[in-house]
Length: 564
Image (cartoon, rainbow, N blue to C red; front, side):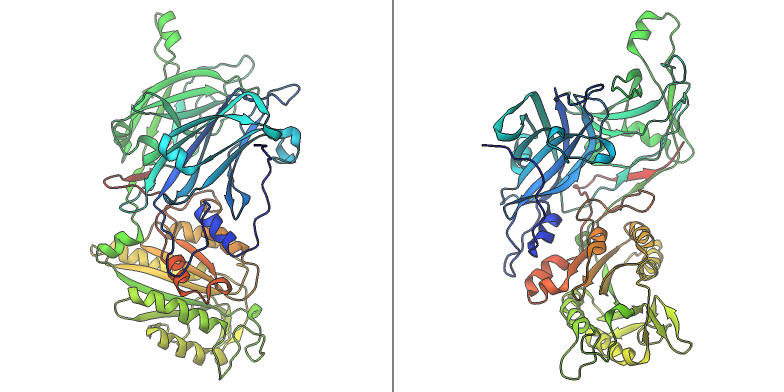
């Protein structure tokens, strides 16, 4: 069968959003039978004997992951670029949802990257592709296939290997683990300057094969580097087995891909945990050849891991509910001027005595679902983006009942009545700042978590018409909130461009703060109300508060931290 490369444009149908979210080919959700995700699958990729497309150096490979939905291929994610290497092992881990009952087709495409020219922009950049299914990877655990060029032509002897590891989506989940490692007095491999060291961590599996877990950045011209803090899931690091052996290798980076071996050491997660608190853990970085040849050889430097390591347990929404938590439900309504004058029939806030406006329709549809989880049926109701009495100053987190000491309303009907009473008294303004609302609820959730009972779980429903103006602050607020017993449901009202909301949802990859810190668990779900307002079953499926990014079964834990 001819192999045609290149990602197709995403379909414009409503199913396109779900296709990205579930990362697999599946039919559109129906009210009667929404699909359930069985697990998440980690995919690691390596290649051998790639074609050399460069004249002076070797190819700089990058892998694109595409999946088929509605008969079209859509790019889901891409790996890092590895400079001048025809046998790359990529550090990037692709995460896909696994549906046991579905045939989920994947395509891996390898390109020779040319930096700013982008990936996959020219046929000459294409190094080969391979197709398989998620089910094949899950069943075989490791799939190795030849790479093909266009029209079914072999890409020389090029092969690609995809290894899979599953995470169950129920039960206690995994957060990140990591820290900062410090190299000290490493061997100098350069003639006219100092080494440019980087560190790789490999997990040694039961069959004695090695899986790359993490690769640090390169620290230029430094024999005592401090690598940036990193995070990886404990499941990825050691399959939640504290005594599983890890191999750590230090290299001197070479732009031509011929990295010089400095040394290695072996450790375990059990040993790493000794770095908690003010303790340090130190390993001799050894070069076996030097140890044999040199009589007084001690090491090729040392690597130090020091505080602070903190253990996190990551729980799903179901864990909180089954554990006896009560739901606290907060509604936040967008009162920015972009919604239009409420006196105008075109406004999303139009005051119509005969039928509800778009905001009321969304509030009732979603609220009736969420209130089933709320035992006391009292909902906090907030507004943002309006000038409010008495001074008519702009506020981004005001109680719509104008009682700052008690912003709760009796049931969804109480929220509706407060909304209808509030609307004529305020002036729609702006900008659309969402971070203050998220941070406000997160502060309450954090206070609750500090108590010994930790008996409440917080759901924030944000109804908004469009573009977020404080995107960086919002991302930061979501990352912070992901450590708390809290979920966020964003419902897009109207026909605006909701690209920012889909970014916050994290369907195109794990959401990160402006500084690059990933969310601990996926707590945001975005739904454009125009697509689902007549499908209550689909709302139930899509608005169920999200579960963690990468779950596994108890008793696995997670840890994160920094050192240096």
